[in-house]
Every structure is written in C-alpha cells, then in structure tokens.
Amino acid sequence: MEKILLIVEKSKGEIYGRVQYEDNLLIDSAKNLDSLERKFKKLLHEFHDLDIKDIEFEHAYDLTALFDKFSYLNITSIAKKAEMNPALLRQYASGVKHPSPKQAKKLEDTIHQIGKELSGVAVYAE
Image (cartoon, rainbow, N blue to C red):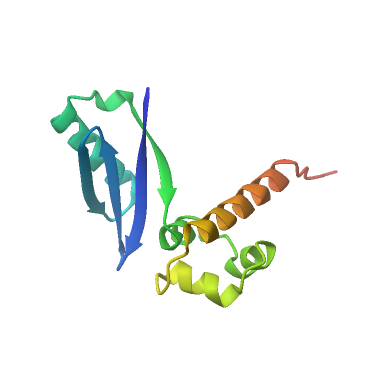
C-alpha cells in the first residue's frame, strides 16, 4: 500500500486538494473528501499507472477544512488550550487569516494532545 499526502483545503462550499507525486502536482476539487480521493486515485492511475487499490492517502488539512471536517471540535477551547487568542483561531478557521507554520504546528500539537487525553478516557456504566 502506497501512502500519498493529500493536502485538503476548503473554500466556498467545496474542498480542494493537491497531491505532489514524483514531478507532478495534481490539483482538483470536489463536494466531499470521498469524491476528492476517488478523483485523485483516478488521476494517479492515469498519469502514473498506479493501481487504485494500492493507494492510501494521508490527509493534511488547512484550518478551514479541519474545523469543517471535525466540526465537533470547539475552537474556543482549543485556542485556550493552545494559549492562543480564540478570535484569531476563528479567523484562521474561517479563512480570513492564515497561521504561520509555527502557529499551525502549535495547533496540531494541541489537537494531538487532546487526542491522547481522550484515548485514555474510560466510561463507567453500572
């Protein structure tokens, strides 16, 4: 199984993606992530003769696409946990402003930390 990085961005109701494979930069858009992945598998098959069954995507999201895909994430809570201004994070999430690589890494680390905390949760029922 070949893992290929798919960068996902959101704008005006559609998601956009790009894949760098060998010397080719492939760009496309779709209404949802499943459709976008199908389009890229087809492109990778057409341009590079890859077997679509052997392609697996790793996703990297811009913040607009991230908070759209994982809409249950609370922007204010994540901003506070990351020691960021919640209004600034809302601007990142809406696409009004874009984070620096340092800010993006800080948010990614915070979200990963939340995931680790949640993976240790036990729910008790009688």
